[in-house]
Image (tube, rainbow, N blue to C red; front, side, top):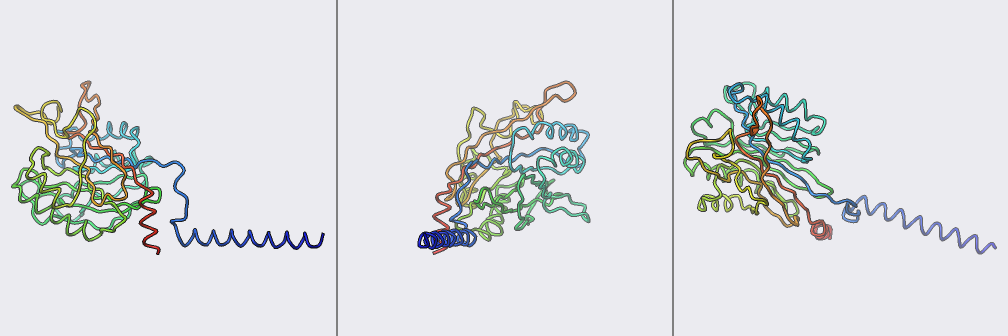
Length: 316
């Protein structure tokens, strides 16, 4: 009987030692932690919402902002990257209506209260906290774009244990191709390369004003940024539609793809599902598009086994 009691005591101490050792290991080495039991893709939307400054009444910015805020929450995006969110009154409506769904709001980038120039128009809404790494203002801007502090902003976040970086930008419109090329150089050198890490994919979102069908400049953009694109699901393959979008219609118009969600260093991404996002509502009893651009959405599926391999190498 006495021997059994000692044996039991030793066994209890043995198993307690194992539990303490496992707890210490999991605290010091996150790799040993189990993967999320319900893995879910990261849902991102990038959308130029056409909220230009000084044109609020002409373009019905506040009415469109109210409609957008009432409808967009139902799509359950985790992060939204808005471009052309210049109008503070429209942002106020969006902020008020979406703050419960998106408690983390960043920007607009390159904002200043002491300048006659407006901000970059890049505004990020997120369900998860993001850390701003850096923002830049492009050196060269021409025409009407010179009145905005256009540039790019880079954030870092974590999704179910997978770190990622997210960049939002809006390149020059209606100018020589060399200007957009220079802006891509700035994004790559000042942000993407500077903050690159082997295990961290960089997701690059925005209105690039470079047509997919312009093979020379499109290929140049991918090369300068060192990014990859992917196919769009569905029949709609354009993000700027001068034929069917009532806010962009023009005589002899065309359909073009100029908005993208690109990825740099996709080693820890299994796949990305992309498609065009279109939102309409009734404005003054007429069914209307809610921006002159369509959005681009992406469902990002991370490869957690690759992430574990990266951490195993780092921790050796």
